[in-house]
Image (cartoon, rainbow, N blue to C red):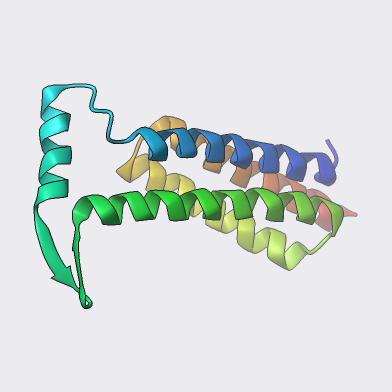
Length: 134
């Protein structure tokens, strides 16, 4: 498989990850059971002062979710661009960061999310090795 194709597969994997994350970020307040509903309620009602603004943990959680949508979308676009321009140093960096992201997602979230990042990181790593052979 050519490096260009591997990087495009990685880009598509990360775009699919973005779609899944977006669905989750937009629907996180839809509690599947009473216990989760109680946690969400507590996240919303316990307000505190932070850097001159009154806020709650739910706002932070929601903001991080929206921020990650943009980060994942950026990674998708970056991988697609790297499939056009052979920048080995940047591919190396992105591949390493994707693998680290996958490990973090596995530890703190769930395997399905981690699989997208890990597979994209593996594709980028293989593309890098193929570029180095050329």
